Length: 447
Image (cartoon, rainbow, N blue to C red):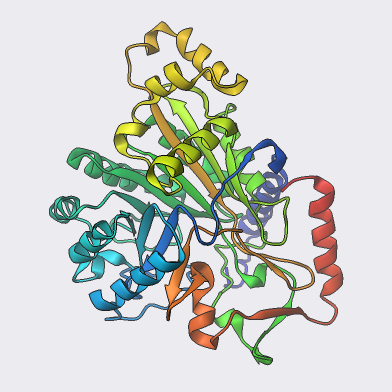
């Protein structure tokens, strides 16, 4: 994008048209009223997940990634266990997201999985999948890994999948999902970062995922964020001005628009009109923002019967906390494949669930086919306010440990570089534009 325009105006005009199409997509947002949904009961001290970064080394360079890639930066087992002691003391959790960097590069990854199990948690591998082989997968299963979340999108330049669009990565996603399914007994999900440049490709990914609820248990769409996409700010740490734009880099891939959860909901509904969230986490400043948007589909491979209701999600969370002592974050494959039993025994609870049950009962071809529960999540990270305040995910599941304290994992680099979270101060003359942007979003009634 930084090269001079060609003499022929055709490509330039095409770029303008594409840009207009993208802006049309961005303006298509679903109105989300948090009062309709179940506010997840997770808190800082009692949550579903803990984020464990075992290394800063990675075998990929993702465009827009804020994590420093440091070769040989693997944490020792002793250091990891010290973090576990902090978590045991400060936070109840159901699952541990083992991340990096790239966690599969850690030479003691099998021992780490065993250690997570020993502490009574479910180990979830957050990986780009590049280093995963059938042999390593088998060893990880024996060590006790509960499941995988594969991060695959067009921010990456991969040797196993050359792609300029998200649909071109589907073959790779399919390969990894089938690898996990063949080994059996583990959950499988995919993360994908979404920007204004790739928003229009979301329906293709949803359409693919919905064809395989038996293979793909979870799809997570993470909205791209970087300070350069908002109004102009200066950043300060301990009263000293710092250059945050070296950490959170603005890229052409990321575009110029801060997407909201409503944009993704609108795109998913293009493929599945029945799509309806059930639970959410709101913002630390913006109470009307759904920062984590959670939905569970009830389906077989060819048909969506409906999505579980807020009341159903509330029942599941409270049941799990009452009998297991933690809020549920990852259900077992057996439970996710028991959608038919869920409908028959719990589908009478409220009108939304009854509609799904009746769609199932009125389709005799579905009676003897397995029905699955398939999760769709949208994460809307930090939102910079016009006055410089930062709205984070309230009760963030991806909290991590650093030097004995809990921090938001998405802003850990600030702690490492500056020793504190930075403060944003609008530059002179930028407040008006930021305020106008905020007022425009407010008038749209979309969150």
